[in-house]
Amino acid sequence: MLTFLASPIRTSFLLALLLSAFSCASAPAPKPEIPAAEPPAQSPPAHASASERLEWWNTRLPGMAAADRSEAQLHMGWLEIELAQFREARLDFYASLGGPLSQEEMALAECGIAFSYFGEKQGGYGISHLDKALPHLDGPRREEAAFLMAWHNGESPTAAPAVFARLKPFLNGVAAAGPIAPSGTQADFGTLARSAWRARSMRANYDPMGNPTRITLHHTAEPMSSTRMSESVAELRRVQAEHMDRGWADIGYHFLIDRAGRVFEGRDIKAQGAHAGNKQLNRNNIGICLLGNFANQLDRGSEYRAQKPSAKQLSALKALLDDLRQAYGIRGNMIYGHAELKQTECPGVLMSSWLNRYQREL
Ligand SMILES: [Zn+2]
Image (cartoon, rainbow, N blue to C red; front, side, top):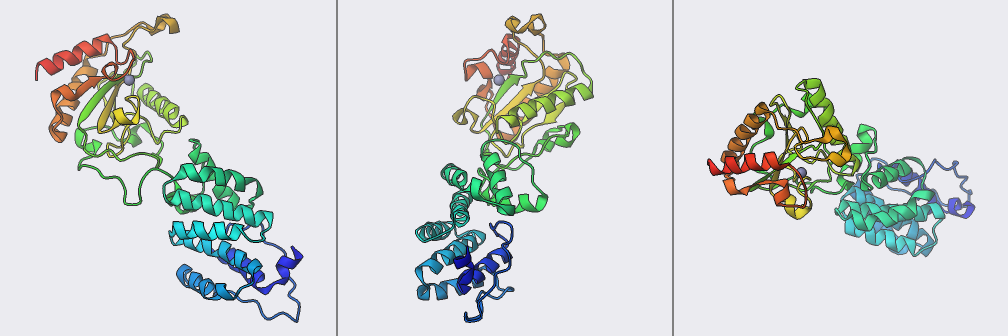
């Protein structure tokens, strides 16, 4: 550490690192004593932009001693991350790892490699680097790394809004350009907004939906007889929590219909759902879930005897299906009960026969 601090380039590097918005640095090191014989510390001007600072390092790199070069490349890597030059950043981090770095600096380089992959939406490659880095990181960068790790493990970590905003480009799933989506939102179908059931916000790890071409019907498979709004809200929140605890971006279904015939907005229709069984099946597939258990599951207890969907539930479903078919040009034979796509009892025999009737009458 003493030799590290004795070098002016390293000192300036450390200062610059601390100034950087992307500072991965640990707790600030004690202020270095610069021996009088050394030239004054050099670093890019504090007001310089990230690209100016990158240029500053770039021009000095060729004249540097090997040890200083690996420090500089570590720093340049983080500037490149800030500038979304992920491939260049990764090359610089790898180059810096080839030089003499402290354990913490190595962790910063590994952390940077992880960020470069996350920035390219290749989280799978980033995780092992994050794994290596985490035990040796400290300070704000450690918090960020821990957040990313938890996120990519499908947990629901929390972060201050400013931190979340900074990390957003590194959360997998959706390109910066945003989802490609047809026009229209659930509101166009007369649904109750997500705020009506105090939905948690959707995470970014979803695939865009594209134009819906099919619809799949489900039941929650939990007995439900109440028509009270508060009970429905509680049930929706339970289902969402269950789905998000699996690491999903949001509740799996796009629409949910309660016993009173209220239609709730579930997952944003611009996002591919998580309901049919796998990504292939979910593609372009709108998921509608009716609250209640419409299949016999007596192995779970006598209360799991199949109930009937309520008349209001079915008329709301019919209206919704009519609207969706018209809005997206979905053919009547492209509406499925879940059991037609996957080995499951969902949505129960009664729902399947209701759907057959609906399709016959088209
Ligand atoms: Zn289902």
